[in-house]
Length: 505
Image 1 (cartoon, helix red, strand yellow):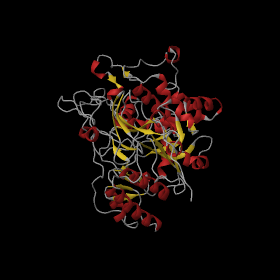
Image 2 (cartoon, one colour):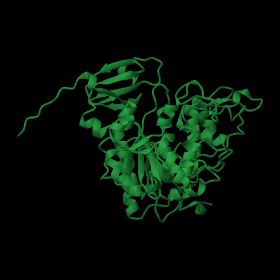
Image 3 (cartoon, one colour):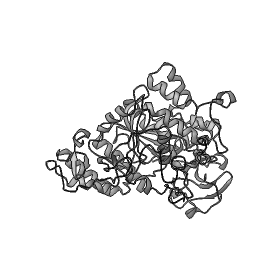
Image 4 (cartoon, one colour):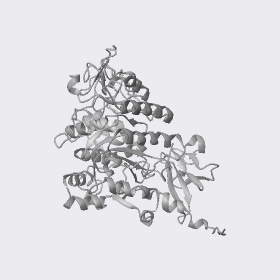
C-alpha cells in the first residue's frame, strides 16, 4: 500500500482546448465553456458528455455560427498528453508539445514533391494555392478573395494532420512512402465512447475488416477519440487528427470531407460517411475507380441520387427559388438552369460519397480553396444572375455537384451507397441460383435526361445506417451468407441480379 498526493493546479495553469463544433457532443472531464469570440457561458457539466447546442445551453453569442464548446484541461495531465488531438489545442505551440507524428502539412507536401513520385507532385500542385504565404506576391495569381475569407495562416493549418498515438504502428505497417495504394476514408467530428455515434462508427470499421482487405483512414476533427477505435482489434484502421475550422471564419463541418481526402494521402479511395457500412465485394469498386478517374478525367465520381434533379429541395419551381438544406433560398441551380431548362447541368445529382484517385486531388483542393477564400465564379456573358459566390454553397454535396457541372464532368456511378440498410434484405432474401425475383421496376427511378431507364442498385455500401443494432444484425447476416458463398450477385436492376456491368448490358 502507498499514499499518493494530489497536487492542486492553479487556474492560470489550466488551458482551454477546442472540444466540439455546434450541434455536436463534447466529452470533457473538466469545465466547459460554450460560445465564441469572448462571449461565453462557463459551467461544470453534470456528466462527461454534453450536447453543444443552443437548445441545451442557451445562446451567449446570438447570430454567431461559429459557436462551439471548449474544455478546460490541465496540460500536465495524462488525458492531455495521451488522449488529446493536436488539432484541438488552440495555441499553435501546443501541438508540438505533444510530440505527435505529423504526416501532413504544407511543408511536407512541398518537400516530397521535389524528390517523390507522380502522386507527390500532383498533390503539391493541388494544394500549393492553399499553402501560399502572407506576402501579396505569393497570392498574386489567385482569384480575389471575399470578406469571409480565411487568412493565409489558417488556410495552411487546414492541411495539417497527425497520426493518433495509438495508431502509429498501424500507420507504419500500412503506409508506404507516406501513401496508401487503396483505402476507405471517413471523417468524424466527435464520437464519445459509449454513445450512439461511437457505435455507428464501430459498425463501419467492423464491416471494413470483415468484407474488405483495404485499410480505412478516419480523419478526426474533435478533441479525443473513443475507446471503441482499438488499433489491436482493427489492424487496418488508421486514425488521424486535424484541426477544426477556425471559429471566426464559420464553415459547416461537412466541408471537412474535402480536407480528409487531401490529408489521408490515398492514391485510389472510396469516401465513406459515418452512417455507412460496407458489404462483401466492395473491393471491386477500387479497380473501377482507378480506371475511371485518370489524368484525362481528373474528377471524383459520385453515385447517382435516388431523387431526380427536379425532386430536390434546391431545385427552383415556377419562378420560385429552391430551399437550402440549412435554411433560406438555394442558389445551387441559378448558374446552370433557366426557366425550367438546365443545359449546363452535366449529370444527375450525385450523393456525396465519391470515389477518387490522386488525379482528382487538384479538383478537391481547388473547390475547397474557393470556399475557404470566399471566391466567386464570374457571371456568364449577358447573364448577371449566374454569378455565384462559393460560400453560398454551404454543404459538401452541393459543392461536389456544382464543381462537377462547372468543370463539365459527366461520369456517374450506379447507386452503390444503398439508400437504407433495410434495402439489403432484398439481397439477403435472394438466392445465388435464382437471379430474378419478378419485380421489373428499376430500383432507382428514371429521369428524362440522364437515366431514362432508371439506375441499378449495387450492394457495396449502405447509407443512413444510424441504428448500430440494426446495422450489426444486417452485417452478421451478410457475413453468414458471405462465408457460405450463397449471396446473389451484387448488382440489382429490373428484378434481377448481375455480377458486373457486362452482364447488365
